[in-house]
Length: 244
Picture 1 (cartoon, rainbow, N blue to C red):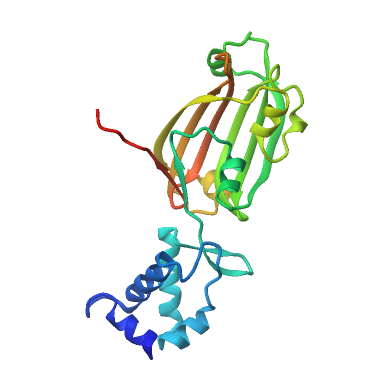
Picture 2 (picture 1 turned 45 degrees about the vertical axis):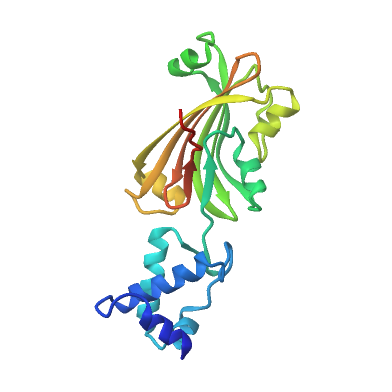
């Protein structure tokens, strides 16, 4: 009865019941009653506890999924989704960053090859026109959920063995003394293409953040050019500001 009263109190009288339910569930997530990675009760359980129809519950969950608050795992249920806040002043690899947050970083490999550098890459890295580069293209995951589509390029001279990259590119570079220490990063808002939507598990046209990173070693040598598409409903970039 108490949960039903909370539901009726959420929003105005003219607010659709599924929107009120979404607001109540959102509040419980924000208050920590449901933590990141926690599974929600089943639609049936929520419907019974709230005295609403399962259609109402489904509509509320769909709304929170579009907001990025919840996510579904096929055959497993509905979970509180991770939302990553990345300080723009910190240079860290994807794997290292997620581990610091207590999340499990993963990869689904799409490409791991050695190829001749493109004209753009020759210019960016300052390479000879015949130089070769390592290409690493993969879907990056957090706790098993697709988060980003990443394409990293490294000159072969700085990373001779592409099989040395398993989870972390930066860890492989660090092992041979070529880990970057500084970088430049450009972030732009965009919409997911058809191919990206399939890899990321979002609708075509969903919001994504396109990120281009150029990273450098201590002597100024550019070691990495990475272009990624991050899910806009899962990833935020934050910056510390100081008054002049």
